View 1: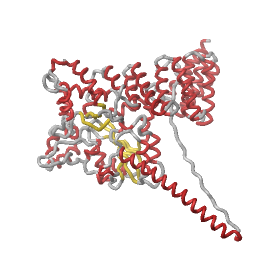
View 2: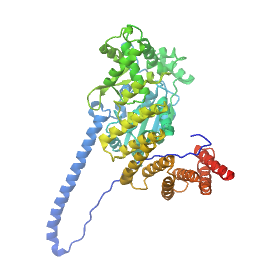
View 3: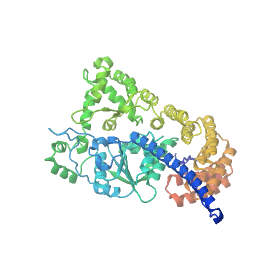
View 4: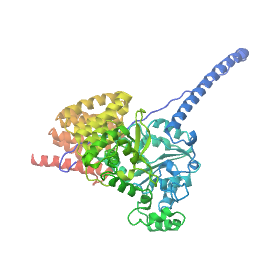
Length: 604
């Protein structure tokens, strides 16, 4: 949005649920009927006892079902939910392995205390959400693991395997008075069907418990999520996933390069662990954790694999996987997808002239554990339909700077395998790269998947349909966007009522497209209705109310009713200045709109 233009804004929101219960009472009985009443009471008690037993049995069955789902969907060594102290191998929770010492089996080096440890451990001492952020292979996961084991050894550990059955996972976490919800690589658990701001808030609400959400997130992913929330014209589902970041109580940043005190502590331990001594010898170029993770070595090895007669097809598999991640595909990658893509990457680099190995040998090279304990790709299980194996990619390789955009063929192929959350992320990435048709295809993919899984009236389906409609609107497909907005508005009104924030978002979107189509009288009527409802339900100074007042002022200007427009925009500027500040972008927008009206009045 630029200055010296009248601007109309869009807004989006969320949902909630309630639970009700009933109680029974008793009355006194005359003495004459005591024996009869006693017999009746015995019968009633027997009946009530049966009902209570049935209810208890049903509740226990439901609890067992939830527990069964929970044990399938979270990390459960030995088939049961572990305590933090039970996890003695940090690699099992996502810490990068390193080469073992001669004659030993330890998969990680001695831990070097990081400068952020005291702040992180203080943060874990109370309920809340703690985010450990930093570059790839900076030591985020190891730092979080060490702090957790030091501060919360007796807490139950709930580490989801993915976004499936998140409702059961969160219910399991809420059933624990003291627990840690471990979300290593947070981006994997966000989006459609994943952890949301609402579910985190519900987990942490109330007193009498000590629940901690402990998450890690690469700096590149954090920047992408924040950018998507701020700039994408659509992406409601992505914003709902990103909103989980708003629940963070403590953000701890782990630096890639060791500070001087950290180097001194590493030097003191190097005599006990030669791996640290080796890493310190490269500390001027790499971070100690970065070097220990073998990230630089795997990057060099993957680049050298393109050489003729070495492992060019394996390099093609790895490059395809990295590009899928760069395109926004966060879930484990289907083998079938990478099999389809590798030939394209191989052909671009020389094809048969490179003397490529067989596909089987390529997979063997790409997934074989090096002495360090890592590999460029590694299997993570089966796909959701159990039709194919899925693989993860070493995150350090994903963050290596690359100038070339991800090929369009790769993005389109990835969409064919993407679930709703990944389809939205791919669509958002495509939008920023000015691939508008691909963005529409991504939002359409998410909507189609949710429509099939949840039906047309589900709130997630309507949110996805809204993403698609807003993107169409931004591309200038106004009649299509208007039709979609009307259908979404009808669905949300039926499901949520006329005053729900999501309903008002859809009504505002409809008003905006009517305004863009120059259906000005219809747009004015919608803006006025939205402003009245928001003033009543949210108050006259709420940002959403002020957005509606700004939009009403703009449409009045376009209708030529300049005195009315000036009054609305003067009020919008006054209130936005007080609530948001004079330099806030929204205040500047209203001020520019007001200046445009004043210029028209002075020239007329």
